Image 1 (spheres, rainbow, N blue to C red):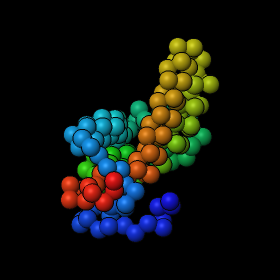
Image 2 (image 1 turned 30 degrees about the vertical axis):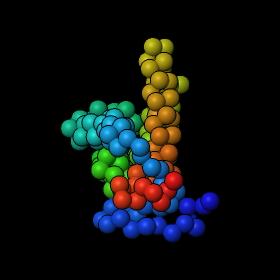
Image 3 (image 1 turned 135 degrees about the vertical axis):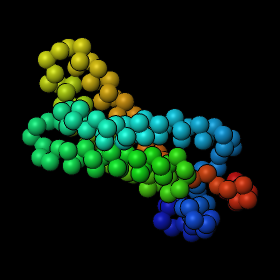
Image 4 (image 1 turned 180 degrees about the vertical axis):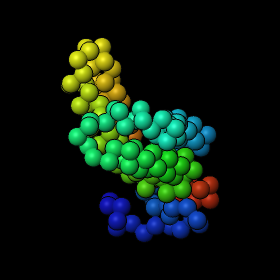
Length: 158
């Protein structure tokens, strides 16, 4: 069943719950998962501003306005992580994280994993590249699975 054909059920200030949204049996585990997934984006988003020069140096020099892109990516990381962690518009947060991860994974880690002269650093960049792919997959799942239903709506999705 297509998500666009379903009628959302309003749940207040957050995102509407669709009949196909995931029902979370153990909300504490869902919260722990959201914390663990978003932690890296909060920390990285903050360091995009506190250590901007380091992030600019990671980017290929052919990319214009590198400090601007570092700042924008930090904002996108922080906004997406906040949306996912707070369970407010988590689908949009998932899209923001995916939007951040795809170019970073390809442009930064993809380039360095094939061009770094040090074989050890190439291996590390391959690991970062694969981590970026895995986190992109998780972010894309969040864009599709949506929010957990509030306690009062549990019976509707079973």
